[in-house]
Length: 221
Image (cartoon, rainbow, N blue to C red; front, side, top):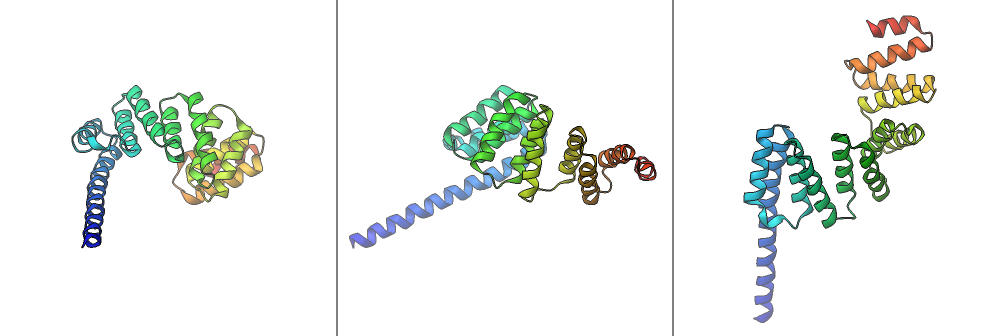
C-alpha cells in the first residue's frame, strides 16, 4: 500500500509539472506572437502578460529573454539589456542567450559590445551556421574583414544559406579584393531571390569591375 501511495504521488506530481509546463508554453507562444509583430502596443501587451501570467517564472531564462525582446520593441534599451543579462546569469552555458545578447547589442548600434557574446555562442555551439553569420556581420561592420570572411565561410559550412548572407559575403569579398569569388557568391544570392534589388545592384558593380559590361547593364536595368 505504501509503494502504491508513493507511485500515485509520483504520477500526480509528474502530471502537475507537465500541466504547468504546458500552460507556460502556451502563454510563451502568445507572447512570442505579440513580440513578432514589432508593434509597441503588442510589446506592452506582452510585458503585461509576462507580469500577470508568468510572475512565478522569473527564475526561468526564457522569461527574461521575452522580457528583453519586448522592451527592445518598446525602445527601452536598458531594460532590454538587463533582461538578457538576467537570462545569461540563469543559464550561462546556453549559447542561445549569448547569441541573443549579441543580436541586441548589434540592433542598438553597440557593435563593439556585440562581438564578445557572438564569439562565445560560436564557441559553445559551433554547429549553428546562423551564429557564425551574425558574427560575420558584426566583424564586417567593425572592418575585421579577414575574420568576417572566416565567419561567413563557417556559416556556409554549417548549411546556413540566405540571399542576404550571400549578398553581404559578396560585398566583403570585393573589399578583400576577390572579385571572382564575389561574383560566385552574388550569383547564389540572386539564385535564391531574383527579385532582390540590392543583390542585382551588387552584381552589376562586380560585373562592371570584371569588365562584363553587358551583364552589368542587364542587372542595372
